[in-house]
Image 1 (cartoon, rainbow, N blue to C red):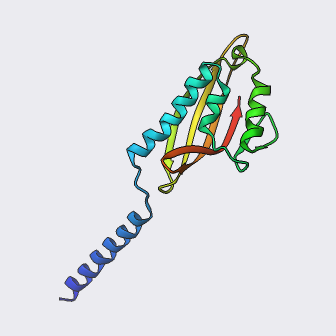
Image 2: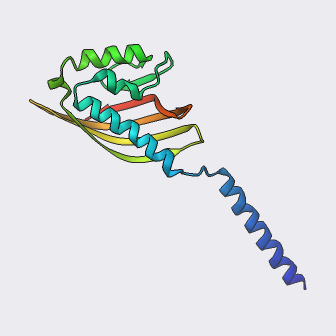
Image 3: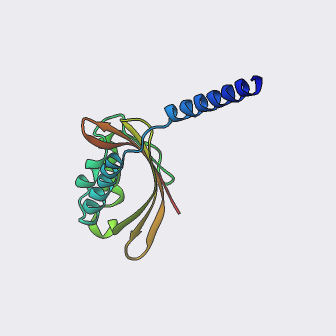
Amino acid sequence: MRYIFLIITTLLLACNNKMDENKNKIYQDPIEIDAIKLVLEDQKTSWNNGDIEGFMKGYWNSDKLIFTSTQHKPTYGWKATLKRYKESYPNKASMGKLEFKILNISLESEKKAKLKGEWRLIRQPDNASGKFWLDLNKFDRNWLIVKDSTISF
């Protein structure tokens, strides 16, 4: 009888631990993940059309937006980020053709996500590439980038 009690207690504790683990996991809703991917696809389309303002629609239009890169000091705010993009890429030729690969998207909550990816610009006379890490927040029904950390190789 004692052994049965011990087995039942062990099973209950194991099940309880498993329930605690599941409580801490956020459901990775494929609809939300697709919505995040669409933000980046729209940005890519705008970029490849030479439309920096359209590209910037994927960013949170706030003074609290943060953009960091290995090439520049951190940029704070949507307007400052737009200005930096326009200075760094004054014309469509300098923008090249953007390609990217999403390596991972993780929903941290219903309104927060993290994304890791690789990017590449195909242009003359050189090609550029690197990685990026994005923090996104959901505002109403729209996912927007609130922090962009980009490195170039």
